Image (cartoon, rainbow, N blue to C red; front, side, top):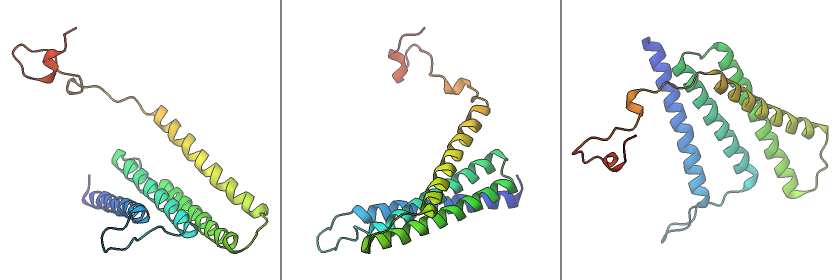
Length: 168
């Protein structure tokens, strides 16, 4: 592995950790109760918290998948472009969710074909990802078993927890 690839992997790992820490802290801040004199931070307004949380979860997934692809040596420019398109679409959908939630909070709104298309895009994108990753999982060969992955055999005089298991 070259030095630049190693640096890119470290950058992906750090970005993944940062996104996951933001998700964890935002979720905890939303539900933590008050403690002594410290005031309660949450509960946050759902009109901005839901789309932000969904966007952060997709961002975390995209970073995780890019990291997985990079570890396997399969990360290509096409993958990066697909991640950028997915993140752009999700950003648009989350922002639109926020705008619609603000309108619904104060008034009544009739949904049009635009909202139907947005819901369809979100559905088909998640369906495509599920089918794509299931097909990729089926195409990859099963992991090889090694002697270390098998449980230890019975040994006489051993204090191991497997010593009480009868041998085959």
